Each structure stands twice: as structure tokens, then as C-alpha cells.
Amino acid sequence: MHPLDRPFWTALNTRQSHLARWNPERMAARIDPDYGPFANAAPGHNAALADLLTGPEDEIWLVEPGEVSAPGLIAKLTAPLVQMVSQDPPPEADFTGIVPLDETHADQMAALAIATKPGPWGPKTRLYGQFYGLFDGERLIAMAGERARPGDGWAEVSGVCTDPDYRGRGLARRLILRVMAGLAERGDRAYLHSWAGNAGAIALYEQLGFAIRRPMVASVLTLG
Image 1 (cartoon, rainbow, N blue to C red):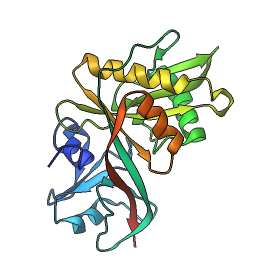
Image 2 (cartoon, rainbow, N blue to C red):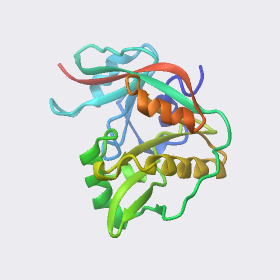
Image 3 (cartoon, rainbow, N blue to C red):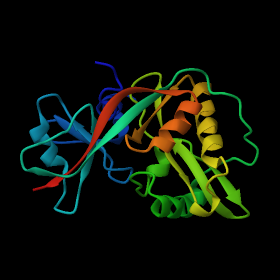
Image 4 (cartoon, one colour):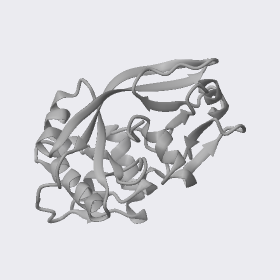
């Protein structure tokens, strides 16, 4: 099995095992909830996913080649994705004004993520890896970073978002390229996920050297 076929399962068993929160039998794991809701189970052990949920308001997200179901759980959302991988070294780009983000930017990062909804965002999501941002004065107007690291040589570009007042200026493009350059410097190849119906985003990623690897499905599960 390719490490990207079940990226979060691979990540929680390899480079991000320190973030894993396991069920008692170690048949299912989720990322520390402060980082996000992503989870997976060992093949044939989806029933163990229910052990990961703390109550009726809790949810787990699974990114798999197909829909995921489990006894005692209901699907709050099922949506098609495409998984895309970079094909070549990232093209050169102008990184002028791009700032590495740190804990001093945490509140602005959370506010931008909540406003633009690039994906699940928790108190520690920014700590998955290095995020970069662009500012207008003191105001964070766009950012991008990384999330899952499923095995050696792969890292996921994530958290890409731009303030609605600043869209259409190519900010996301520049930030994605900055993230890709950072990943390449440490020997990682970039990949990402996009909602299958987001033709504009997919076209942008293709311009940046990504190609669709395979369809995937996002399943959001809660206690039934």
C-alpha cells in the first residue's frame, strides 16, 4: 500500500506518532484533538473508531480511498476529494514579504482560519509544521502551511487561506510555493487534498506542478 493511500494512518504510525491518541487495543488512533480531528483504524477494525470519540459533540475526520462506516457511528458528512502530488521541484517564485509565522501570530492565524475555513483548525493546528504568512501592515491577510507527514519523503500542504478582501492577487500561489520550497529543502515532496468540485483550486494546483494522484473521500463521523 502506498503511504498516501491512508495518509493519516501512515503519519500516526511513523513521523507523527507523537501526536497519536490510541484506543485501548491500539486498533484505532486519532491526532491529538488540539491539532485536529483526523483519525484512522487498522484495516478491518473500524469498530474501534467509536473508542476515539469523547461525546456526542465530538467528531473524527477520515481521509480514505472510499467512504468509511463504523458500528455505532453516523456520517455527518461524506464528500469526494482529489489527492494531488507535486511532480517536479517547485518553480522559483518571489517570496518578498512572506513571513514565517510563530506563536506571536497564533490569534491572527486562528481568526483567519475561522473566517475562511480552509479545513479543521484547533488550538495547536499551527504546530503541525512551519506556516508562512503575508501581512498588510499588522494584519495577517493570507497563510499556508503543512499538516500530515505520512512516512519518509512526503508532507501535506494545508491551511491555505486568504482574507476575502485580498483575493485575486496571487497570494495563495506565492505562499504554496514557499511551503513547497521549505519541504523540498528538507527532502520532502509535497502533496495536498482538494474538494473534488473545486475546479478553481485544482487548476491553481496544476499550475504549480501538482497532478491528481487518485480520488479520495472525506468522512466525518460522530456517535450515533
